[in-house]
Amino acid sequence: MAEALIRLESGDALGAEALLHGLKGSQAQKLRARLACARGQHLEAIKLLRAGAFEQESAEQHVLLGTCWQHLTQWESAEKALRRAVLLDPARTEAFVLLGTTLYQQERHREAVQAMERALSIDSRALLARYHLAQICMELGDFKRALSQLHILRSLKPDDAPVHRLQAAIFLQVKDFRQALVELCWLVEAGHADTWCFSTMGGAYRAIGENVQALKAYEYALKLDATLSDESAFAAQLNEELGQFEAALRGYRTLRRDLTWGERARAAVERLESHLAVLPLSANPAVDLPDFQGFQPPPVSKQGNLPLERESRVGTPIGMAEVGYEGPPPILERLKRNLAELAERLGLKARSQEVLDRIAPATVKEGVAVALRKFPLKRFFGDRKP
Image 1 (cartoon, helix red, strand yellow):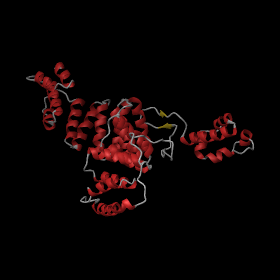
Image 2: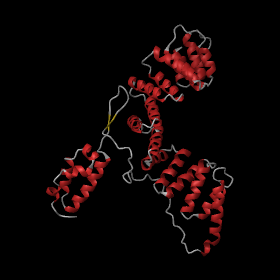
Image 3: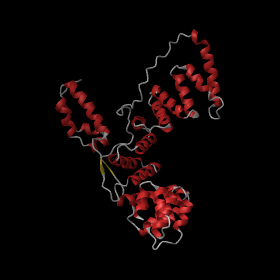
Image 4: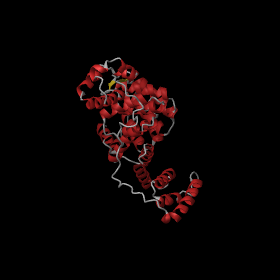
């Protein structure tokens, strides 16, 4: 029996099945059910689990039963089995994670959060529970908590692609396009990019005015799936904006029969055909676009890239310690740079830090101007003007 279990857990299903041939008893029955579930024969697995050959019901049995019902999208049956599992074994992390995903599928998000929190209170390194908790928090609009969970996940597993994807999705939700692009560019460099990644990159680059990179992102998405109508339209629009009229015309022509873009595409084709007919007589110079050197994430210190103000400490689930974020708040960081530049021009660079050391981040957060008026700046800088 032990050899069959080892074979099964190592992925040798055929070897495990051969060793189970002719064996009887609850353990053999349970392993046969696991084999059936692994082969996608979920109804057969359920039949084996309900056959009544078990000497004593166990949490493991109900976890497997709940998993099979999940595969069959029978969420109420899955919930019933998994609730029985956590009742039999309240310390079984896997059962709470599966229960949480089952509740989430039934759109009972608050209950799903509680199940994930319970899993994390049992095992703080339950990565799947933390990831699902971040997903649910994002859908509930609790972006700060979602990002705090992902911060912990990245410390435990920094190269996990789903974590980077979820972070990108959250930053897009709050319209922090620059920070989203940092995550999306990581996915490209790590070889995890797909149509969603490239399409999302196109929209994010376009939102910050990086039209050349936006166009290339849409082109990569279309290489993976040429039927993407929205991406085709956006690429055609960008080609037109960049003065690449022939490429824009080709793109619009492919959309003339599209249900969503057809009417606008036909109008664009007529406009560009008329334009290209007189283009040789036009005095407009050809647009010289820079060579594409690969996707580059934009600087994240420009244009208010942190709509979610970073807090010094962020709450975490039940039973977990708080996560400490290093570094000053963005407002204080910008103040330091500005004051340092002013002090350098005045030849008083050393004085800038003396002022900043006396300003608490909480005070700056409430109002920089009010805080600065409380300090005798003339004592530090004199009456000289920059």
